[in-house]
Length: 466
Ligand SMILES: *Cc1c(COP(=O)(O)O)cnc(C)c1O
Image (cartoon, rainbow, N blue to C red; front, side, top):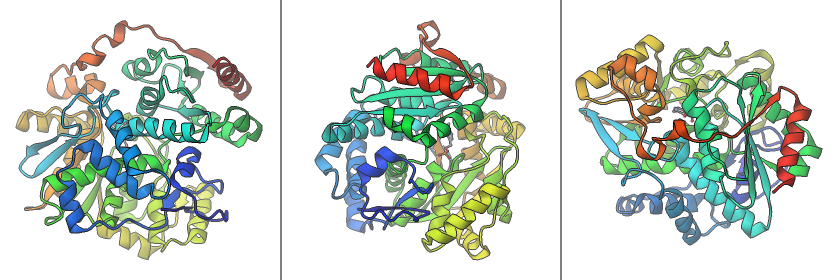
């Protein structure tokens, strides 16, 4: 299996999975995609129904790592990756209303769906770095869930240093503590005196500084890393097989930010899973809903909401779908993305937009509607959903068709958002046992001004101490 960039201007050929795993973004600024989609036969789907979840992950990933990483190695990795999940089914499916299913992706160590991919990435990095005798420093910026999932996945890994920047005082206390109470030597948390955009700009500047990049072997695990998308395909396939696929089609609804999770569902469809519709749920930061309903992809100011992991205006992974809809033409894709960067408005050709509309639909909920949705599912079904999952459930409920199962990605544990849960349902959402003493644990982080040199020096010192 080979990979290419959506902007395709560099003429590397025959890139393998491990290369794109470690590099993340393509040097031309594009995103990596496989050159073709593996096609799954009916017999294979039916065989997969009987596998354990980790073995299914290994089977599916092996199609994307062909010629690079063997199935047996992947099996060992995925068994390791999913052993710390607190639910025996790993990705349990709950029927919330008739035909409306909550696919719970939040039973991993940090209680958000980011663990599904990140835990496996930790294993994949370790395997490839060992094989190639290399070391890397992963640097990332977070406003919440990504940082803790990455730290949890890479803590204690011998060949990796992990540095996460968060905006001082601007993450929730649960989210901050999930990062700063991990005390392994290879973890460095930096609180930046600034906002999330400052943190993200700082990470971009570090990647653009080639001396620095080489001196610490910089790497990234942000949501544009193809390996993360690949690790999110299996739970869509698993849940659909449980509900009658490949003989019967299903629909999916996904609370969407960077478009990574729902893109994985679309990829499952490219591989042959029968999918009727993909429903995007967004909050008041509704760029995707505006795009899907009226081909208006224009950037507005990000507003804080009850579902902070979806407070996004530019959904980076959308570029992958765009590239596919442009008949995989990297030059057209590049031109559209350049113009988008300059003008803040993406001119998606009408025929490409229509093709996208054949598969995708969307709805957005403001904070009040989110609370109402949480209340609705609690009062009608005794189901407590966090604000993100509630947006997905409500999107799924609105678009549910008779006789077609609607599977909703439930992306965060309610205990991550206790205030919203209390307001909507009157219930206290307790942290699960492994995190019950989170507020009593020792924290460790350093605070730095929003200055590139200061942060680079701190990272270099951290790496040298290892
Ligand atoms: C990251 C995240 C999302 C959005 O997922 P994307 O892949 O960025 O669309 C939704 N809900 C939660 C809880 C998340 O952490």
